[in-house]
Length: 638
Image (tube, rainbow, N blue to C red; front, top):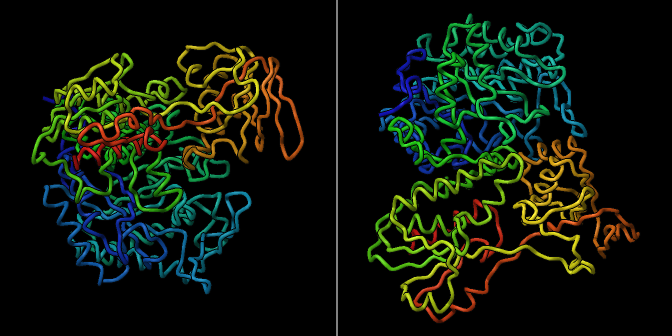
């Protein structure tokens, strides 16, 4: 039985009855063709509904499809039949579904074929970016009607309600914010005027879809940006929306431009639930608390403390569609937890491409055709290497009925994960190891720890298939002096196997270089990163990179770019930058120059076993998501 008292209490929101308090927040996935939802999107949402989520919210574009290609459109009646199929796919599992009506800051296409950015006022929030065009009153009125007609179509398609997106910097959000709205007409000035666009859109929805239709609003509780509104403003917005007849408030945090890490690893789980508590105290309609609640016990505590009425989840349900059922049944150690790497957001927010990468869920976006099926003929399978690729391959192969032996030369599974968890703010990565280790134990995989698999021992075991997942090894650059005693490998420093002095030079400013720099700075070391590219952290995803750079600067880590190391001495590193020789002083040098595949065992086994496969970093150095996906896909076809 579940130990969770609050998460699984029924609740009524507007005219929608929910079996529990878990809400799937709207995600623009890109599973769209010509503005229509695909079977891929149907299956994506249906799996989360089947997984026990109490309410599904999905992003639907109110405007002309080309203005936002990642969400289905609801701009014409012609889209209703396909939207109805989407609704039916969710309803088949007894779960209500709501359409989040989205209006991006784009309008039609200009003569060059590029959507034009618009806003309440011609104000560029980001430095060195073109100012948007201010909307005319006539254009605002057209958009208000779009919301009303969109809601009517949503109701005809069978959606149980609609939610208006008015937060984190989308068009309605820009109107509400005093930072971006300096209009002097009826749509600017006082808070009521700045909310007029939103309020008139709610009126249009009531007029076109019916007064009895359930309507919610998603908005930022606090903008966390100078010139924007604060929590008191967020409370007042909530009171005005309640007075306007809104059925629930779904809370976001900040603006896209806010210099505050909101969904990043350094933000503690449960950090933002106080905002929901404050706004819940100001209104009587249900409040959805979102952001950083992907742990069922933290979510439960938020509800128990009155910090919201419902819990909104996005990345947690990307990682594990069965989050709700597993939590309800007390199977907490079976939840495949999000590691907050933000690669999903890199795709759908930063790069605006369809979602096909989750570091822990290799099936994301492929739910239609990647289920694990029993093997037609179980095989004896040896997997060499207990990193993420090898562990995932072992999990999937064993799930299919294969007889699996997993060899790991170290005394514990995890591969490079054990180094990643030592770096500041990356403890979440350990969730991957913990989940896979428990799955492997549950499935009865034969694990050989502390045993070096040799070609002779593998051949002697007579496996029918061998999967080599031996990972990678650090690159040691060909620089004179690299063999000196004051030179260390970054992974050895993170593991505590090598001590460094007080003034450290790090050769390499990629993700590993940044991690070891933070690690050493936290110990009080003076740290300088020497990077050959034009910027530090170029291999860090755009969503996470700004937070990493903020931390490095706050830690007073010196960052030097466009540098090639030409020599290492006992007193520092010789470099060349733009043809000019320089010297950086330091008593210790740490190498973070990347990794290379470890292919030796695979080469030794070629032609000596019935079937040989290489996956993960030993095939091609990637990040953890690619390693897990490679293990999953290979084992699924084995």
